[in-house]
Image 1: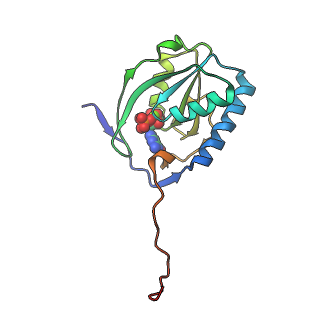
Image 2: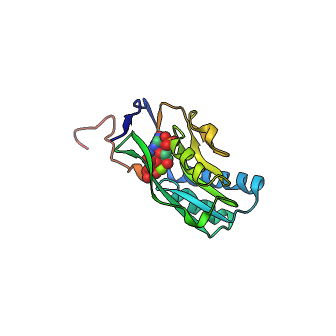
Length: 168
Ligand SMILES: O=P(O)(O)OC[C@H]1O[C@H](OP(=O)(O)OP(=O)(O)O)[C@H](O)[C@@H]1O
Ligand SMILES: Nc1nc2[nH]cnc2c(=O)[nH]1
Ligand SMILES: [Mg+2]
């Protein structure tokens, strides 16, 4: 197995559904201003699927293709050579298409998909410094040592109060 362990991130950044929705709408506005309508969107599964749905709705784009790439295994990062398990056939060489992902970290996934669709525009919501050069557009930069927790990675939990009175 050709796997490498990435250094463990030291902090977490939690993204709520509201924040993700706002950021996707911000990205849609930028993309419409800079590129106008796209012929179609290619979502990098799985993380790019929800951003692609929001962008498709905002930009009036109904042709949603996907590319399934497996780059990581397990939680927080054993990185493998990316493997395509479903190709974005409908997107041709990417002309008129937007590639969407939730985030770029090392940039390995973005680079891999860009090589498959050289004429497409690449956008994501969050970008770490190493992956940033691989994007055409992103919304928010996140430190390299931060692990982004998406809404689908988390669930609300009960947290006991600081002070608990015996008779309550
Ligand atoms: O820039 P990189 O270092 O390549 O990392 C970024 C990729 O990692 C995550 O996907 P992941 O492989 O965890 O799969 P998932 O989207 O199916 O959860 C994320 O959704 C990006 O696609
Ligand atoms: N959820 C999540 N997946 C990733 N894949 C690569 N980096 C990250 C990250 O920071 N958060
Ligand atoms: Mg992904």
